[in-house]
Image 1 (cartoon, one colour):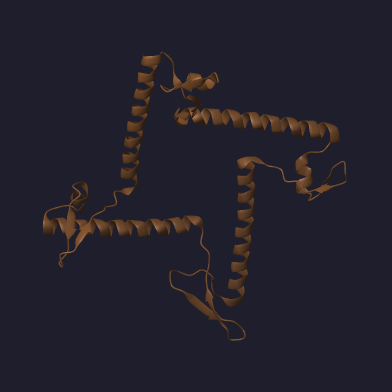
Image 2: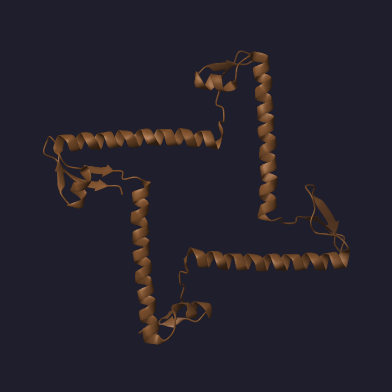
Length: 242
């Protein structure tokens, strides 16, 4: 049997960060050794699209990891370039046809020189899309709240009551319905955290009981590479989540 004991997200994060830092230090050391020997950085081959040849004359295409920050900067630069090009196209279109490519919610169409009809679709920024999405969500939330208010005014009960009491709801034809009411992400998060805290407390209680009975922590077996034997004498290898 393999025993796995959770150590918590915080400790796992610390171990992960330490390993990443160690790998980054090793990578930086390799790059420094390469530069000292050949007088060039590996990034130079990738930037110039130049292959690297090994001792057998085999050509290799170089791809160098730049890290999340450098990738983000390169992505933003490319995005800004595309947005500038888009704005330039819009300006040229407006100068030639006296109309904008942008439009509101309705589909817009136009005909080219040959009389072919085109449906015009213009991209909008992520901010504009987020604002439109938020407005739609707010409108839906208002509508749901309105329906709940009307239901309570007519029947004197909230829909949540049926779900909480696991009571079925019957329609005009007598069909039974099982009610599930959305509580929102905040409520779901609170319920998740509460359940997780309950599990963590249960785990700590089990650890404390084991320590009280055997005078050792389960993590000690993994740290020392020691096997754990049950009542039947079966050997267990202990693995503890960090």
